[in-house]
Length: 524
Image (cartoon, rainbow, N blue to C red; front, top):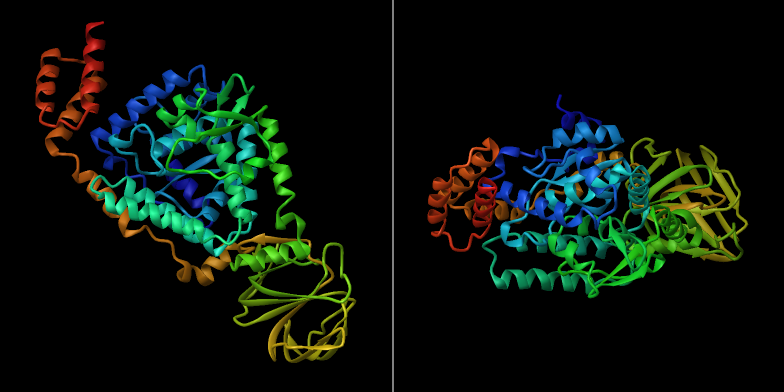
């Protein structure tokens, strides 16, 4: 097995289905020229402007100047740092990206930007993901921050509107990288993203987590406000951003939790950036943010977050059981049950999955379920009556494994409408409410087909159009120039002939840059 195949084999099955082959031979000669041009400019510009580990990190992670990196070569180097990389297509679901990162796996977009968008692209590409994210993980403390930031993002609760925004961003990136996209198509994609953003009812935990990640791992600076250095991947991988960010046109402010409440626009250069004192500063802000999440707070706060989200999340009960479902209602009790928990009863919409320590137990329950809070024991079988400290009284018949029939209840003397057949859980508290299923792998095995994520038709068409946009004759010229460069055998007369032939392609400026570089080197 290759190093990359070994990496993929170690991934849980629910993550493996997002991985694609790098297909190195699919990179065109112009793609290779795009890489070389960007990396050459970035290395030259960032040598004294990026964090001191940057140049060392390029070498340590298998990223060279002359050609697009091979994931196999990268994985050989990354393994020494306790990391790995896999290839994906464009934007993948945030929960997948964050889970991979928490596991120490970089999701590397297989595609590369077009030469028209060489300064900056909103779409994930191999320049951003490899030359941007990989070098700084050579710093072990920062690498630890990335993993922990991934875990926090994975635990944050996302909403149904967050999914709509993700799909709109994904669509916009595809359209913008399509060389044949019309202005009307681009405008429609931008309008769709605007509409998705406006549909948000409130700022979710997941959105705040993505903002924190954006202003640190993507667009972070480090050091003093007067003389900051670059460490964020978005800055390290964009020629335009790398130059623009250090000018007075960009406001620099000290990193704080304010970044989690600061919006960003992926379609333009950032007008303001946050500067961390050092990498320890990142952990301070991340810990402060983590403490605000339902994952850490639990109780009524967590229940309210889950109810607002209208998505699948999981409750962690006092005995360690994890209940994955959609939380649809929480009934307040007459008296508090535990610190931060006044809810007496929670209604869950199925399917409902039970797990412990992230490992599912048995088949999911297909119907409605309830969680009652307070001290009490549900018999395995037979009739039961329970009076809980919240003021809730319930009675019914236990079938086994938490299933109950003929359930009746009252809360502080008033009848409560309950399902006749349901799954009932009892807990003395609610220490945590976290985003997504507690066992993503098991949930995916049971329900993955219902939530299948496939490469969109638009993405495939955009790549096809991009390949067709490179004329075979122009590709041949790029290939010949690259062969000269690699063989270190430059024929000046032939370069002149290639230059003359290139005049047939007036919109292609990159080949001319390649020719001038070779001529200059040959004459030196």
